Amino acid sequence: MLEAEVEFWPAVTCKRMFGFRFLYRRKAVFGALPYSRGLFTPSSILLKFNPMPAGLFQQAQKEPRLDTGTRMSGKGWLSFELFSNADVRDAIWWLNQAYEGAKKGAAK
Image (cartoon, rainbow, N blue to C red; front, side, top):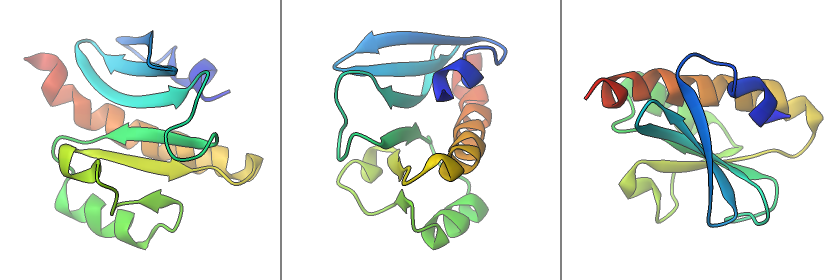
């Protein structure tokens, strides 16, 4: 469902790797959706920020479904856990934040 939403955003491509569908804005990766495996749980998605704006990071620290303390967070990756269908809307919002953040990386 999430891939069906983001694949129509401008300049987005999806590539399968390591059991995930990696989401790119031109050449900059901004997320990964589980395909045949999950990273931490089968219902978590990955978001890439490089770097995450300070205001957004403060908001992320208050979001219980977003793991800002994983060993991958030092590399700009965060995981977002979907517990129910009601979480899809917020997952799309966070994917959009990562997508917008990838605009700088995509322009290089």
